[in-house]
Image (cartoon, rainbow, N blue to C red; front, top):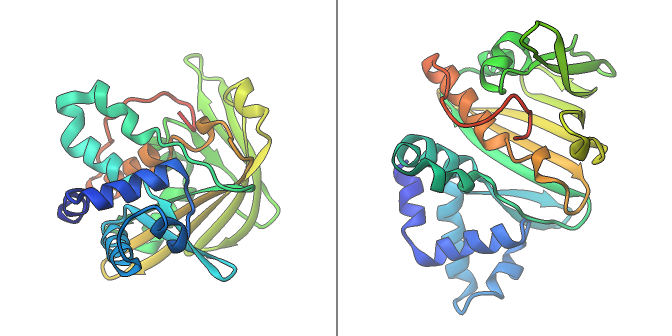
Length: 254
């Protein structure tokens, strides 16, 4: 939390986040061109934002792209803001940005747990439902296998929320899935996207990187807008055993 507040205290760093909010996935050169300061200064500010987890970088060919990571902002909201001004703060996690097709969204979070426990929390349907708006994800988790994501109606019948295929699996390090969202007609029309879970041990914790890509440019943000809350709930469950009390419905991306 201290790193997050330190990063947000500087107006230039807040402006950099604003630029990534406006257009995600920018190079250092593109960001530098928008500020009346040196390239070195922009690099230093980006490093502080990366250390706070507010910016995540990915290589794409020979370029290094910078993405806004809303998960720490969601954590600040859940820990400090929601109990004082929840209606105002709810929009902090509703972050929209666009990238040249195919569009991708990158989310990063650090969780004090082991890779094995984190993998279990991602793949076990009962644990998954505790932080995924009540949605259970069932599969035998083999390459080429299908998976289904369902909520449960009051009468006990399953409510389809999503489906897809296991593309790649490497327990407890990596899981790649296609995804077709089914919770509304609007998201159904978006077609198939892809979700990649990557787990990296870091000391007594794990770095979890979730990449939601193969999205069309300007895709409906219901597809990816729920990730900050889902990942915050996952962290809370693994570290405390408690459910995260946040607004939301049983929809995967709401």
